[in-house]
Image (cartoon, rainbow, N blue to C red; front, side):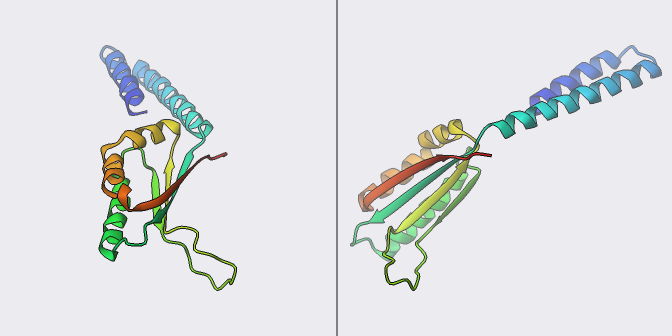
Length: 151
């Protein structure tokens, strides 16, 4: 969108160089309309693309220390730096008073991307790969769910 705006602005400024006031006013109005149309098209394209929610459940090995858990949480938090991550949440299961409830996992990570391409960028990002490399030996099990969000 920024590049489109700059292109339109450049065209407008170039065409203003040898115009009368009336011509300038007309060209400015035309440029404003074109910019508004471009914004509307971009908004429409963004709305048409469903987002993607990446959910990862982690089961840790029994011998993982509190220090290692704290380091893992910092690693999860570091994933916010990945350029394609729009929102990121992580945490532990909520303990309830229900007798039938079992502890289903140790940590959950939930990441929102604009689209599949954002997820693909994240998958190859050095921060993501470093987290996997640093903590893969602490996981007993990992389960991943990718959900396309319908708008």
